[in-house]
Image (cartoon, rainbow, N blue to C red; front, side, top):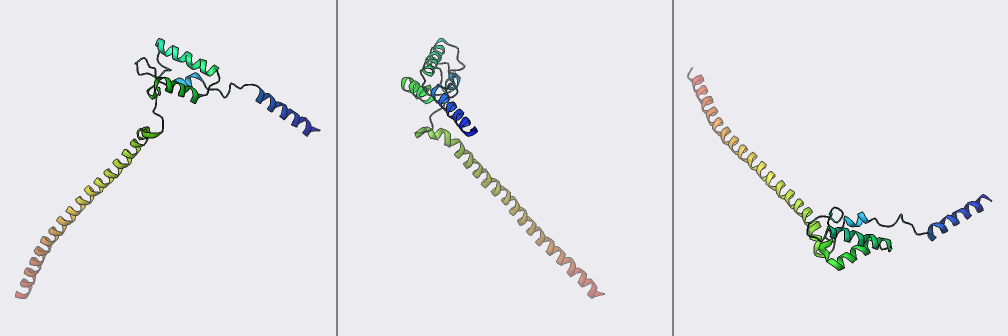
Length: 158
């Protein structure tokens, strides 16, 4: 009996959810405005510009949202009307991928170059120091050998 009652309640709830349009899944105008630039020439995002042109564009966005269009449909409508320059960020396709990939490639190349130069610099300092140390020891060894020879001569003479 409980299964039938809860099953009927579940079916009724699903039917109610599917039959009424949900505003929970709709896109907000500010979400779209942050993806578009104002075309008045100010260089600001549509959401922050306060000119009359921005107000007209925001009204167009609200109208499209009320018609039930998705975010992609609205953005595509603006791109077809104004071109890709209306977008606040370039789309991630084609040649525009360079704008997304190049900074990371540059960072990796810079780190590799820095590591190579630092290692080269550090090891060249060690090599010079070891060369100087070896030469210094050779001089020291010659001088020490001379002193030892002198001491041995003194002992033999006595």
